[in-house]
Length: 426
View 1 (cartoon, helix red, strand yellow):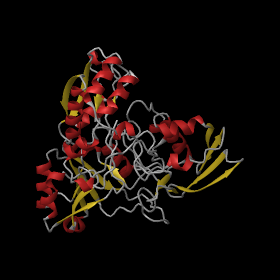
View 2 (cartoon, rainbow, N blue to C red):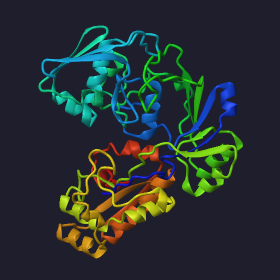
View 3 (cartoon, rainbow, N blue to C red):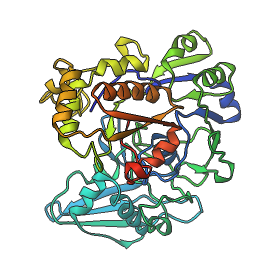
């Protein structure tokens, strides 16, 4: 329903960090993530805490540089022949899993197959593939039905549901059941015995990791050098408490700064506040299309005339220069961005029209369960605006507040509303 592209968003791309003097001494980095790590498997969920966790402990066949181009990562190189229908990938030497076993081509093949059943890009690649084979320990061969020039882009995507390389015994498990045992291939090891739900997550540097020897360290590509011996996540749900931890030096890095606290932290000489994700963040109102009323495309379409992007951005709390509106499905300046059809979001906003169109589309007063996170402030703010919009459009909204981690787990439910299912969330 909505899209935004921010230069600085409600903590999503605005980062608070001190000069790390203490961390440089004992080589420990204390990090405040925007949400708890409730799911460990980056194939199973698109949750950002899981994605961040995944990139810490898993390596990838390809990485993505600052220009969003794929670069070899675990792969030494590749060769294409048969008019682009055969790709041969060769692994770098010395790759090792955290359990001390070598990374072999068959581990990669199993990882690709598991990921490809869950991820949309991976599904497209598998549909175009006749066979993925590992003729020896260092070689991966794709035999394609037709040329698929985006193969490296798929294997090296940097967004959620990226392709983590894991041992074959784990990758051979059901992709629709999350893996709990984390045997990674990346620069840090997950310390499962130290995890405390809602409070603490820990990692230690993996001495057996071999960084790529060439290339620039950009995004997920190039040499991944671990500068810290240990990284600890401090899961702090209250923004004021997180800000205090930054000011006292208890924490080194706050991933998603609350905008209301930005002036306070900017005036602290010990801290630096700066933009990390210059491409910004996008907000969505996501509807469950399995059940009424959002299984009706006419109702979903009718809501477009009620969406006011400014209301959502103002609710996040950022200054006007920090956000954008009149944004479509693809972010501005991205390769797929277009103004086509934008009048649906930029024309006059009209709740009465939306309400009338929804009734004409056959809305029968069905209860709408809206999941609202109480522990992630900018998501809560978006949800408050979204719920108000739905109510003004005549919809019967039932707000269910819980923590963000529980919502991420519950969104996988396909149960009907009267059996505990959900209808919408931001």
